[in-house]
Length: 285
Image 1: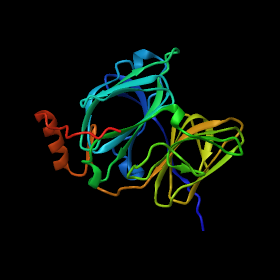
Image 2 (image 1 turned 180 degrees about the horizontal axis):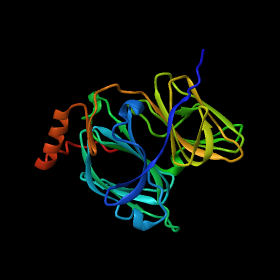
Image 3 (image 1 turned 180 degrees about the vertical axis):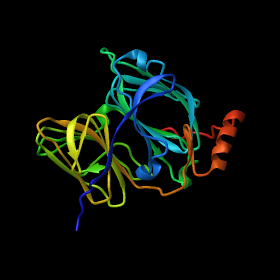
Image 4 (image 1 turned 90 degrees about the vertical axis):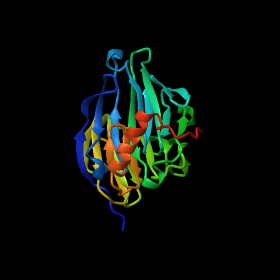
């Protein structure tokens, strides 16, 4: 018998400063790993004033994780220590698997209205994959399929499968699903989610009930276990990210932008940064 997922808890994202002084809101982060495994952090960096984001995120390392950047408006110019460079434009996604190690920078640019809107999600890698070669999956807005349901709901499928439509991000070891869901007013949406997978939603427009809990703009809703989740709107439409994935249930040793399984591995990573031996190679695609 199938079981609906209720909401374990809701929480408002909190104003935070990151990088060289970028103002953003953090939905979850350090210390919340057990509830959201394999996900580590979600930042909402929607801003309308270039003074609050223009200094960006100067050169910094990553190892042992994946960083997923999803843009709604504006752009992020990026470059890394292996010579890769590019721009994540409106509606685009960069799914970066840091693996054994990468050093990069991210420089935001607003659109004509000064908007720089988007999200960055961090996902953990299992111990067996933490030292895999780094790689990128860079997805343009035009490459992300839209699924329109009979009730008018529109789903952007970034990763995972909805009604046989497969998102463009592939071959991710934690079997994630990453969706951008837009619901019209007076609409119900139901999504099957594998039992045992972690699932959460982050509302960024309007208001809706998620698993029976009311959630508005800037609200994280973490689902309990079950087979499916529901969202219901009232007199106004809503839009939210809906993310799920297979938990790793492994030890987490986390310091800044590096996430390993043991303190010894963390120390080794920072020693390698100091010694100039951090970068192991790349497998860009």
